[in-house]
Image 1 (cartoon, rainbow, N blue to C red):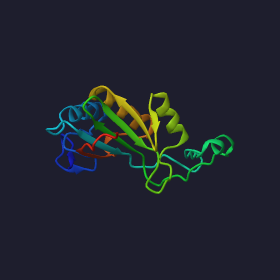
Image 2: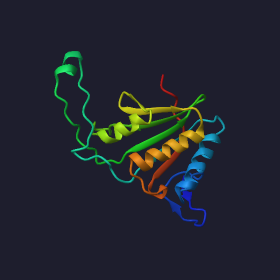
Image 3: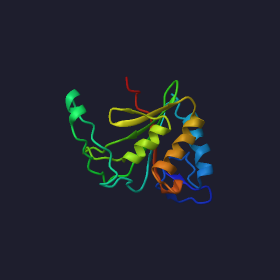
Image 4: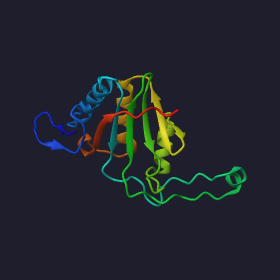
Length: 174
């Protein structure tokens, strides 16, 4: 699925047909519309990937110590930084829109740093396993919060800098 700018017929790497990446002011309502009018079953997921990693060796998140006593006495160590950029997934569910930012790449390296985790925490996100998750009641609020995270936490300067993929949403986790 490719997107075109309204004034241009050339495809961009910025995702699905419904997503307007010409400016943030146009991106928010187009993401809202996409979430509200997804496929016939109403479930859609949009994966928004920044183009640059935001984690360095000095800012990588700390590993979570395992076990009770080890957790209390163990030294915290930083994870290796991932060379991959951060990802934000926005997925519709029957009763909410779920925003998810994975903490690790497939090799267990940090995609988000301590500063990003603190910023997401201050916005009400909760840590669940290896991801930060936020449930939002409506699509408009989800689109605004997703945009805020992309700009303030993932350092995405312009929506055209995103790689966006719209796809049917996966079944919700139990």
